[in-house]
Amino acid sequence: MDQFLRTADAALRTLFASPKAHIPSPAQGSDEPALSAEECRLSGALMRVNHVGEVCAQALYLSQAAVTRDPQLRESLLAAAHEEIDHLAWTRDRLNALGSRPSLLNPLWFAGAFAIGLGAAKISDKISLGFVVETERQVAAHLQSHLDRLPADDIPSRQVVAQMQQDEERHATQALAAGAQLLPAPARQLMKMAGKVMTTTAHYI
Image 1 (cartoon, rainbow, N blue to C red):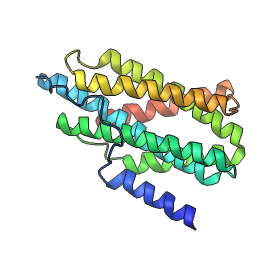
Image 2 (image 1 turned 45 degrees about the horizontal axis):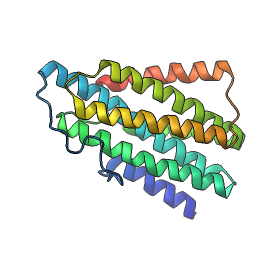
Image 3 (image 1 turned 30 degrees about the horizontal axis):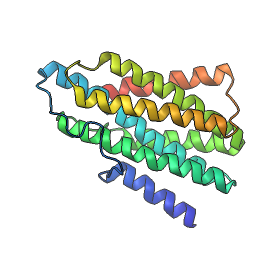
């Protein structure tokens, strides 16, 4: 019951509260750029997609931590979720600065990611960690594509995305070192397809 209440509280905070970063944003101290209306819309859309990714990250780590019976793994997953809160706050700050908004479908994204994480964790801890590895690798690649697309003058957003990319790559490395079992190619491809649907939809909604 305690675990359920903690998970429910974290879910509500992720979806409806204003996240508070534990580490200052990489964009702190950078001047807000003078972007054109088109550039501002593009940056806002890309940061909305990134914010959705962090909502999903909370759901994945929380669901996996709720299922595992390994106390050490649970603490590791919760620590990663704690760090992802920084990303959640940083992307939300950028959305506010750009005059944009989070995805209207965030509750749906959270529920879907939670269900997927729960399913992977119920199979085994090794598969659960393998899911983390593949998720973080795909997210890191996705963030690189955003660095290629963000307006050159939007230095604050670029600083946030670059730091997030480094953190996601580190999470993948840590999960691999913890004994992850790499997912088979069909599973990895299915994850890419699901991610494509999410990112394309969140770009606009």
